[in-house]
Image 1 (spheres, rainbow, N blue to C red):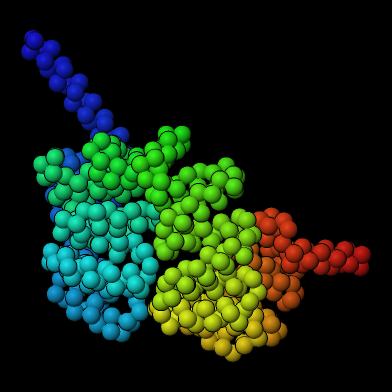
Image 2: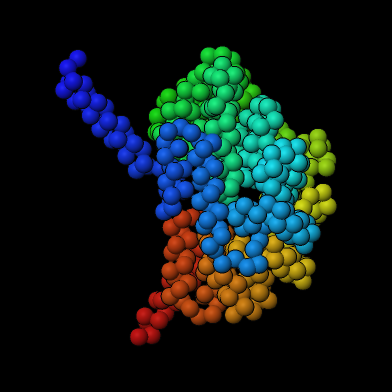
Length: 491
């Protein structure tokens, strides 16, 4: 080959490589980009496929940014981000003593253990965090990293599977970097020694931030299928990759392949159920969700999905009650099972039984804002207003940004005809993002009671646009119309 021809070919290949890189960069999350030399080096290592090296340089950049942040006194995670491991541990222990039911300090302690390569301690703290907050995304990822470092690949895969079934992602950049680093460390092994299915799931996680990770995710998943390394879960990863790319038929074919390998794979069953739900095929959605529940009735995520179909899609409260009672009978010390039972009993109007179930859940598990809110709603219905007010207050203290207890306090004040206080609380619920029709219609009624008829009209129009058959909304709309006609006649 002539030198000139060789030079032209080299230039063409270089241009193609640069074009591919720029195409990839355009779709990557901004977490990969930074203004420092460390961030630039991290990106270079990432694009070269050196994920462990990239994680180390990104960690250097995070330390730089965290050190510049004016956070005094610094919380445990801020100290961790700065790389001050000993101080982070001391602060996390202090925070945990002050708020023993808060999982965040426990997650910080798990991260401290990861930083020290102490997998056993990291797993213990992650397990405690998951007791305090079921399926916490960061805690699941920490557990996956710790298990992977210990060589417990099946357990690491199960942790990742539990995390990836949620739409949310991690809250802590430090956890993301631990996953990125672990991916690189596993890929540094000889190809035949790599945990293919686990790596497929790790790249599937990275695909959330970089669409180009679909390629390695699919390649590892396909290899897992070929060698029988959790082949059903390999098919699920292939389905997830296809689904994110909009290839619905291919995704459904992979879910079917997963079920051919393992008919009890709940991820595949629920994946197919979601497809039929989007098509409005309630019977198939029910069949598949029930199959997932029967395959793993003690999985809270699966049980909640089944209960949602029974109540919201089919209105089958009796079957929902039977399923919830069965879960409590199998696991009488499972706090979340009691909570689910209470929710069904509330729907059935058995409020005293629901209160008993919620109280049982409180005795067995941590108090959460959601549980306090459920207790308050039942107490309000039972006419125990002072106790309801106290429970709503506890819910707000546990999660000040949760809108539901503010709407609840609004309803409580409205019941006592304290309309100004009612409106203040309900508007706070709206400001915090509460848009549930059952809550918003109460706000509309309060506008009417204080004479803000225009606001009431606008509010109820929004309610009926989203729920045309809402009885309270229709009744309020009729009152607004009568008032408008009367005002017009007087003019």
